[in-house]
Length: 80
Image (tube, rainbow, N blue to C red; front, side, top):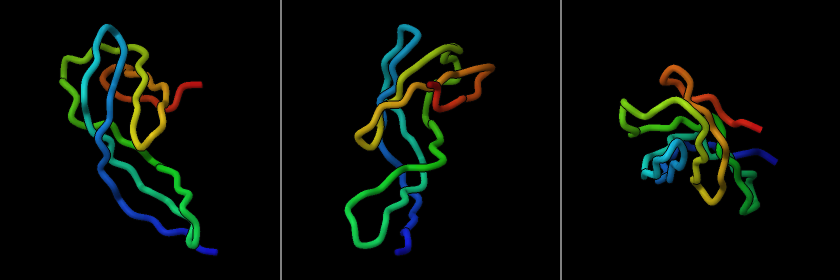
């Protein structure tokens, strides 16, 4: 079976460092042909304030939640 891939933009909720805000995640949605199952790969967190502090956050998008870290203004994901 082959997989289907498409670029998507998803609404997201970012929580951490005393903040809770809506943002957006851009990712590649990969689905297995002939099934209803899919995963998101290469997520990129977008539309967050420039002054967002470095630290640990959780982000919810596409029905799942991942832990991420902001370090020197860049996102490191996922954090185990």
